[in-house]
Image (cartoon, rainbow, N blue to C red; front, side):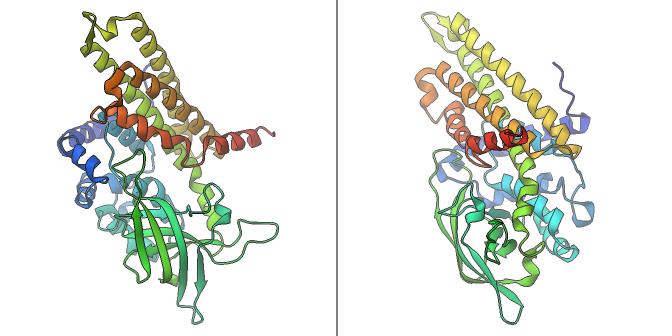
Length: 385
């Protein structure tokens, strides 16, 4: 079926991006994989390509696009090549919406130009060692100083993607105690300069997958954050986080769909080239049936993603619909990638083959952005259950 979600501009961007990946990423990706992160200088290349400024308003140096479709193309093309852009996805997908929606005009003028050029890379710090999906249980605090000029930040965060290279981090912290009838009250957002005294990056975490994406632990010991770096209003941070969740979850859904589509491509190529018992693996009926079944699931996930992308661009994607898209597409990707790895046989277990890396990278999709169980709860609630 012909896709209608993209226009000529999106496809032109796809061609440029595909050429960039082949020239700048594929030849060195094994080095990045071994190092456990993309080099910081690579982000300047992404900035030069215009990746960081697509959705930034023109007055701050961006292209002023409002569509999520360019981000979706990036997901599809990186998955197709079996690579990633490291932790830079968080910079745009997760952090930019908060800066656009809640920063003051003064803050936008101060932050967004360097956001576009890659001079200042952003990450977001929500999860803590003792809290995962239960963000209302966070313990990190930010206390206003007696003279009212700054907040004093204390606490710790973990699983922070992009945390090693980040120059500024949007930190969620408690500025007030939770209320008896509202545990979510009292959370605020701060755009913290990582060069601040008392701010430190702990371990770069050794993950099962997403090896090229730097993920870190962060610690704050009496970090002074100027009042001018409070993002939005005090104590309203939890509601702000909820506003961006549909886009975040759609991003995970699109990424999962793209990984599944890539897995079918890898498996088809491999089975057509691999010979056993004097025949190509692709010539066996079981292989044909497996690939056909996987292709059907990928087609269904594509349709879900395309419909959700259009809804997001129209401002109509609900939290429950985003949860449904994430749940469906991540479960499809789990099944498809596993079956495609099986078609590779023993070689599918070797990290030199993209299917092995894809298998490990995909597993977290059913965890971060809200677990599959949380997605089911959101959907059930929308059904009145």
